[in-house]
Image (cartoon, rainbow, N blue to C red; front, side, top):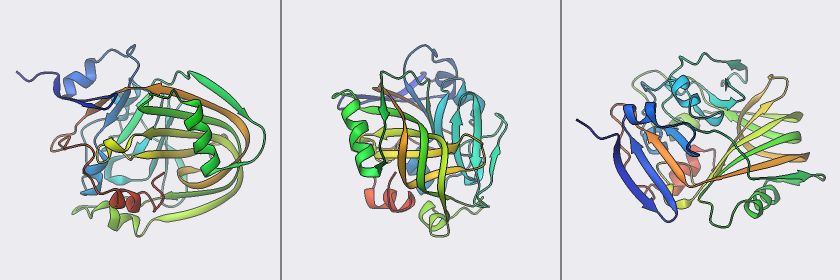
Length: 265
């Protein structure tokens, strides 16, 4: 009989656990943690199918990002709903029976909030979040509600087998610009040592309040808003059939950056 915890790794202060489906299903929600379905390494290899549903992920997290089955757009999980921005730039709510090859989520409980009262571009914004996070925080979940300008977004098209690698898909990604919108910037900061399991550094998506636009963020300016930061050291990874955890930290960062739109956010 397989153990719930297949593999335990300690990466600095980060506790990274790969779980069987049974372990993922029964892990207590009250434990403060980040939960993840699949790995970025698997996406890089073109593994876009999964047997893990959004319902399973969202039972463990109310804030999250990722993609859905067949790489059919950019996923935003917020306040009990799942939204996907397609390559046609259209935002749609998807049922929780939808499967996901890659998603990251947490029960968001911020440890600190901060008001932004003047325009702040990407580099200054991430520096602010770094300063708000606990010095020893390995993983940081972020939610920023406010008004944004010059939002650069991207998404990718639904794929059909045989699946191409992610870098080939991103070469044909759709990008678009939103001059201004009120909404939520959400996502995570992961340490470099998790490269391959996750996207190292910041990985953020945007969802507008009127639910007309959203997607993977390439650039933006926060005009004003509220930054909320949640620190977490535990990451529980559920692996779809045919996907292995691999060795965190060894994946080519340039490959990840290319797949993330040359920005790795």
